[in-house]
Image (cartoon, rainbow, N blue to C red):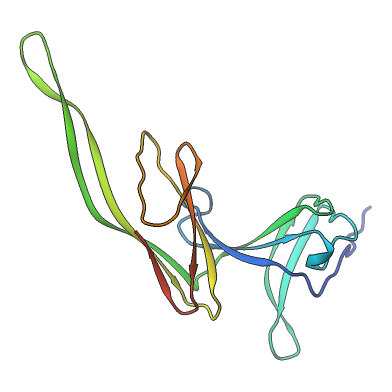
Length: 182
């Protein structure tokens, strides 16, 4: 039979916390990730990380540990990046509010008898994304929105095109604050 052994224990792994909103992938709530590299600068890097369960704890301030989450990971070579998904973070709230929807640029077709009907139109939608941070630290939220079809996307924030139907932006929100993404 096989035995399960503790492969690596590191009390001082340096990591970045990133919140992601990808409704098509994780659901509508912001999901918290711990990102790190398997290298000496992050407190690891002496050997590859094997396949297995990663458990994340934090000090609870009373000489004990609080369990944050766990995830099964695949082999992580030295100097490779890894992500630990800790699940939905209820202290970070994301809300999408529609402000305006209208149709314009109607196109018409006419048949041989002279009857005319609407063949197509453009839909213009304006909304506001609001992010509220109820944690005690600033957060970085990666917002990835997917739009099927032929879309002309405009935003007041700096965005990048991730693929042909997905746009992405990163927003920093102060502790106890909120940010709007129009």
